[in-house]
Length: 151
Image (cartoon, rainbow, N blue to C red; front, side, top):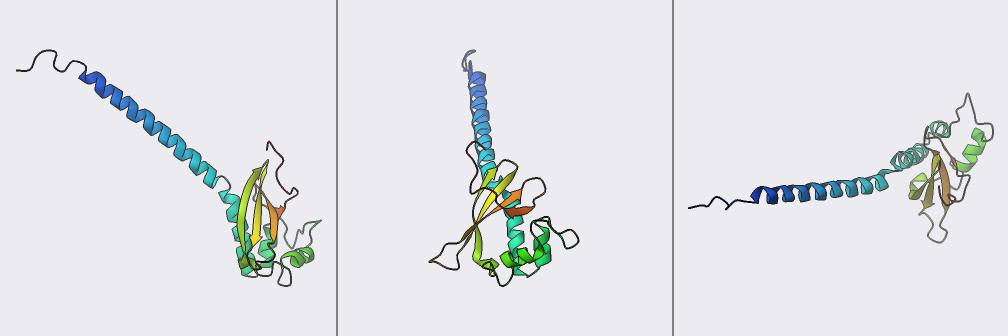
């Protein structure tokens, strides 16, 4: 025969277990969100650089030039298409865009510095630092070798 006080405190134990599960779930969600944010923080900028190298691989130089915010009707004043072709065309040191890969990215103020490395010559590791503007995803050469501390 069960006594009147046999189940006394059972509701309190269930409530404590529920609270523990809720707290652990919240901590797991916060940690997962932090990891995902860290991994995908510069995803759009990396994707834009990959798109740029894809256009170079398909020899669509006008479209690649447009990713720099420059077009044939409105060329960039300080970066004409002829200079672009010297830097990125078939006769340049970037003639094989498939040899390049994104080595690292670093957020810096209003943009992202994307370090692109070449794996075509093991003796000479070529790296280029590209700047991708966060708001409109235009590409350019990085004005800084790295981001100043605190940004």
